[in-house]
Length: 355
Image (tube, rainbow, N blue to C red):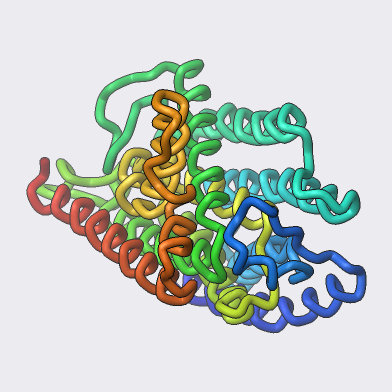
């Protein structure tokens, strides 16, 4: 538990103090956000706000995790390092995308094929490596079984698992990216979901099959490194908290694709290695809702030529309906909190009932 607290505190400190330094650096170099002309007109005042702030979140999380390992004298685990690799790798893809937008002064960065290739390379590498590195109990970081709160017994097989992991990583990365349209919305929501995975990791560690005996053995969790995954989640949560201080409305910096791809990948990675793949859809319910709003809008328009929402993603529909940005963010945070609470309730209820 000490490592969890240290990781969160150090990442918070680094992000809180490092973000204003990044703001000054990015402003001096002219790394400002470009605003789409087809978006809400109220966003035009945000033009020029520094972007690529997600790099601070990644750096702060990595430092928080490293310091926690040094202070507690515990070696990093394969599961923790793989999640950090996935998060950092996708962050690099997002950083290149953001940098091209800024340097070329256009709203599109990497070409679609190049961006997809980068995401695929990182995600597939993570998925393949996650099936390696077995511990003394024969557990690898990930399992080829489909999981909800634990492995369900439905075996996907290595190839199907890699495809499923890629789709899950891409889906969650894009979900966070679509949510990142209003000041503090994606950052605050990410804080809640990563916080929930601290609780999941700590609980799985306490009820691990490596420690369980007697009646509890039938309800234990076969997860390779649950406590270290809680440390990773704590580091990312702390980094997001510190960044949120500067990203809340009116935002002085945006995370950009650097942050949204990294955070989405981090959430998907943690869900995969904690054997809670489908539970992530509940814990990250707001990301799912916003992604579905885009799918519904595009699909309905192609079929009928009409729109369901005034604009997608969903938060922009409410902007065009006249809601203030801060009102939308706070209410969406409430929805995100309810999704996290419901997901955690389902997680605990499954253990209590032994279902």
